[in-house]
Figure (cartoon, rainbow, N blue to C red):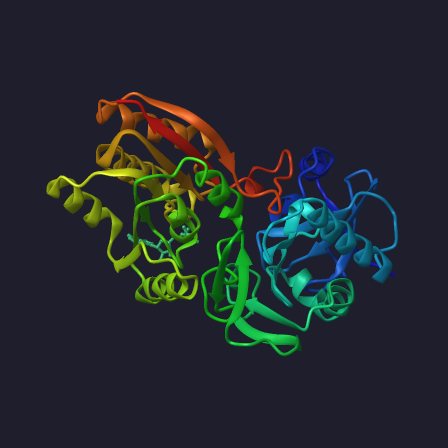
Length: 388
Ligand SMILES: C[S@@+](CC[C@H](N)C(=O)[O-])C[C@H]1O[C@@H](n2cnc3c(N)ncnc32)[C@H](O)[C@@H]1O
């Protein structure tokens, strides 16, 4: 018998409104449940509301996985995985690394699976997905023919679930370095220690878009392994990549050499200091990319984050030559599209320059947004043109 969790009227409204997360305060009874199991969900008047993954630690107690009485068995999970994977096939992605499963937006809450060539890198970010991992891995292997699967279960959010942070192979073997291709560029990726699961796959389509406008001298700020720098290099005369991480800088250089790209130089720098220094020096660029880490990790840090976005955008606009392009991003979901646009607008006012919006973009299509669930819309990207 599947145990049942009863939610209050607010919880029922939230489920009916399409949100997959039900908070602890809206769960009135969870007798007989265990960490990470699938539960039936009922409303206050005993109405069946579907099934959810239960957590006894997280504030998100229930993550809805269905809204009907279908049995949650291997066939159910296989169908969910198949749907997510076949959607990526129709995207005709020109890369060997991309996201296969994007959690809530693939109706597989708290599960992330990225493909890196012949290998998969997965993250189980709740008790439920952690418990399901042994059942899901064979299905993933069968559907993708992966040679190896790495569980990159080191994100801090696992601590909120009472789960340990660990990185382990859960199928086959996974090498230290995997070589992948994105558009015409090959990258050596470290799936064990690289940021996120190895690469910032969510920016792939924005890199493609930015390549339409990039020209002249390019400054790639917060470059990581050189995603934007290397993708835009063939369009530019010179490319300077900046990152605070020595490891990232070394990888930009190594990736450039491996691809025979000779116009890229990378250096270790704090972008906030370096933009000021470049401005003092009177440097000029035709294209600037700003792709910082999430400045607002929570609601309390939104004001500081907005000040940070305004600061770097102001400096970047001052460094740009007339007719130049600024590709500016925010991956903080706590800073929504409107707030980010306002911060960039204020930067343009302070810089006294007229700016047009050439493209308004978001995370790539392999990282879909679930409508009505703002938590799934995190990456904003504006391509701007400085007119004068
Ligand atoms: C979102 S990632 C950039 C991803 C990259 N643009 C790509 O397409 O792969 C942010 C990067 O900013 C770097 N970083 C964080 N704070 C920084 C700072 N103050 N100055 C320079 N780099 C910083 C991190 O090391 C990380 O590599």
